[in-house]
Image (cartoon, rainbow, N blue to C red; front, side):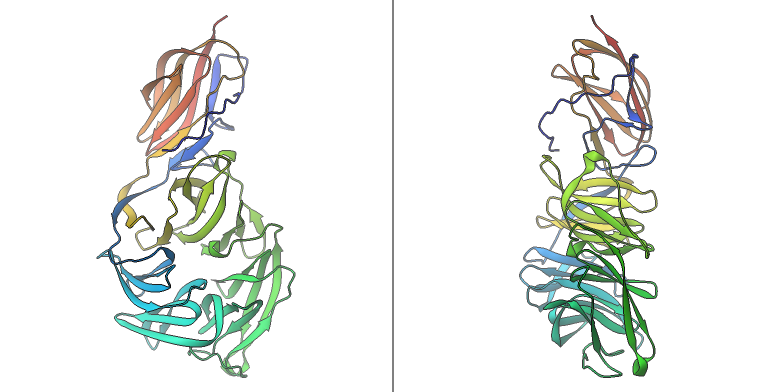
Length: 425
């Protein structure tokens, strides 16, 4: 684990011997990896195990899994399209595309299930062992399927929304019963992504969202839109994902939720602030995006947000791509696939910087009191020495020092953490 450079901060002096380190409205943590933060206590985040990524060449820029065909699809920075077989952990090349923004979706046609990759003016459709490739008249991005048509932003004019003919994704001819387009008003910027949400499409734009609605049969088809929510920060293209009944997306330094009516910035603990969000996906009520820690914490992580518990967690990423399957989240980095473990949770790390609790000079930490569930261990460091303790109950410490660093490790839940301090005159 990488630890940020030492920075002494002053904890809260209560005027009593009891010091609350974590619990209630107190949290003196300065860095956390592998624990959800928010609400009551800290709960460890999902665990993964490593396996080889056989058959893949290049660095993935987009991945997706489609249970309808029991296969995944991946696109690398070399413009190669692969299928991924979850049971065999094997990648197999099926097509070559230009290096454009990638979008993926699944659909049914004539009783068969397909998965599609859209990249520039190419659409690669996969069914069982069959591949169909369409060459489109436009370069598009942010594609999705809605009412039997493909909707997408024009890659060369980000204010234009286009759609295909009904039930023929390769036909984008402009006609009363075929394909069409509308131009959105420019106030909220260019279209980044199109996300189906119920009977609507949410167009995530550079500075807000629009609601897109389509009406009518193929011969009387019309599309209307209205703006619904603005943000001042510029939003990131790859982070837009539907999770439950909301859409989540990020700017360079913030995470947002759009519930269909309003955009709100999600609040996270100060020590979890990050930047450089990208490559979002969602599974089972959890939204994940790649991020870099700030301000000086050296490392790249996935930020995981539990939409039910409304809690955040970091877990190690090291510049990886993450995608979802029926089992959970997978990530890919350095030639390895990291898949969800069967049971168990990620071993979390929660750590303070050196604390003097606002009291100068020598002190004696008499005892610590920890409330936890599951497997939790704590350690206390003072004067260059570290002592470890089991993570539940009242424990005698008798550790002298001017300041103390507290750490918590484990795959359980931390509820509260207190210390009893004596000041030496």
